[in-house]
Image (cartoon, rainbow, N blue to C red; front, side, top):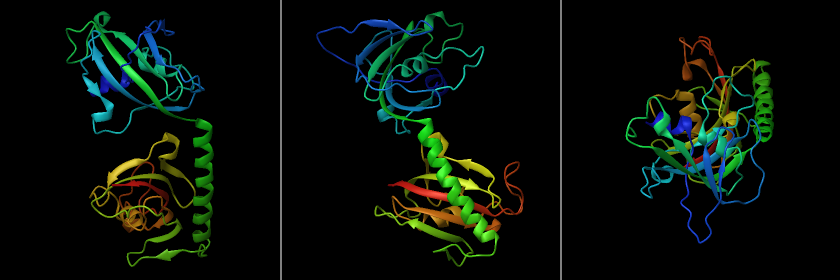
Length: 280
């Protein structure tokens, strides 16, 4: 059910008023109606669109699913940079292509024509996805931020590899080395708290193995979760909300002798840029 909702769609806004909006049709023939039009810039290929939504069925005002009350992260879709032959058309993707920040609209998915209906909608004829666009992150801006952070990480790693000490670098008793770029003035990131972190992770030679920056959304987790590598937990624990740091994590505080094949070899040191976006 969840896979269907977020693979084919996007969703929210039940508008009312005296003037009934005009129904339009997307490129693949999905009917849609715009309720609020802010007349802003629509997303370009590669941009990431963040939205809230509700799901209704057969034109009913009864809400089946609401992203605002789901307790999950806000949904997002990235506008494809190229079309994939044979890819099924998505009513939500086609709708968000033509909307700007603050716009709201409803798109209709004719499920009675599907050979296999999604679970829970076997007797439905139509699904209504009500969508409001919250934010659009430009691919060019995300790329520029990632390039800036990559330069910081690579310079730090090279300095350490050359046997020099980066300015402001400190060490913990466990062997973690770090430089705090900005402490942050929000709540302290402490074990047991829910945090959201932007990050960029690379090997000492500069090889990128993972980043949240290109996705446009931070990673949520509970600090102290046993699934986290020790160096990551210890490093995030040094900061407050709004804080930024570069961590140089020895292998024993990372993935150790096993590594994390195929991207992280055995006994690898790790270099991370981290930014604590929120602490709850």
